[in-house]
Length: 147
Ligand code: DQA
Image (cartoon, rainbow, N blue to C red; front, side):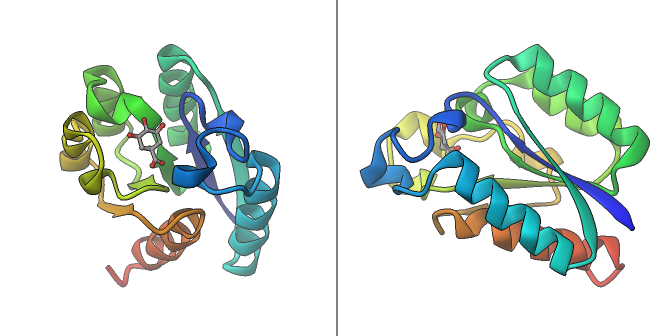
């Protein structure tokens, strides 16, 4: 069974209590349970990782290149300015799908820029927790060679 990584960046561990009007009331744990179950249905083993630290996210991406077929990544605010995470995505070569719970384009100006989009295989934003589930579907198409 191929393995995939679902990775969350800073502040996403507080999902459920963090700005529920923007990010919803589902907890981090319940979203991860749903995402893992869907990944299994799609035929993937799924690892979930969250960190509030840029370096830890980069280390995890490096490790994923050795045993994962792809990554669904919500890099949180790092999306908007982390050239280090962008370089890590380029370095690892495995497909990375950028996801966001909120529609970043309808929010603050600084959220309209993603420095990682150009090196990700695609971007999904604005569908709440379903953005992660859509990210899994996208990865399945890519891994199975249909996209
Ligand atoms: C986010 C959007 C980012 O702008 C924000 O910093 C986050 C979450 C989202 O999932 O909508 O932490 O990535």
